[in-house]
Image (cartoon, rainbow, N blue to C red; front, side, top):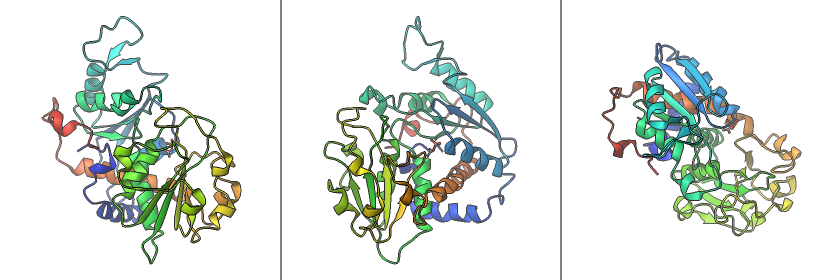
Length: 331
Ligand code: CP
């Protein structure tokens, strides 16, 4: 079993319930991962993903190896048939096969480059490991998705369940750096599995990949979108059409106390790290309606559930009986 996308979840409701059980007794399965090794490969920075995944693996009794590929690993080549006479020292074919000799599960973080949309959509790094590794793979945020974050978000929202069908708003907010669409994409995919009135609000031209948003409601008037909302999830993403560019930095999209007053006393959510007084004003982030730390807390139980499910699933023989089809990214 791999955990690559929110689509790998057979029943979100069931997974959330199971994660909440783990949260109550995180050490219940403290020997499940004994003598198993989790390899964590980072092509980008992290705080929450790295520490929550390590914590979850420790809760299951696993060994952990962490490698920062950006400054520690050989530069990898991903193209089949490449003549490797320039920068790259090692092909993903050998790298993924070799890491699989040392690790029972490989977790990978590899963000979008935000230069070539097709290349990012092809998930070069994640797909390379899926193709050539012989052990299960976990997505710790790839070019197009962050399914561990959205599972944690679902767990957090379940802990703040409303008596009525909730209104959930994903709002774009400004940011000085061009950011990927991964978190927003996975949040949208997760919301499509929920019973909720879900609205995405962003400036015109900032549409996410329509293959992901599908029929989700889009409202360009942020104030209108906020009306009677129960959850406000703020996130910046760079332009998907003018790929990777910042074409809007309008501070009027920052989440303020006045905007939160339009809601139904909504909870404020963000995956973190967050730029204070750019994405959201201090007063909102520091208010009792802010549940961002709870989201970060639940990252541990989301990934612990994923690790547990992989450890409990039948092993894949070395050399791989996994077919190319079963290993492809499920989108
Ligand atoms: N939300 C999240 O993935 O945080 P990090 O980038 O710090 O891991």
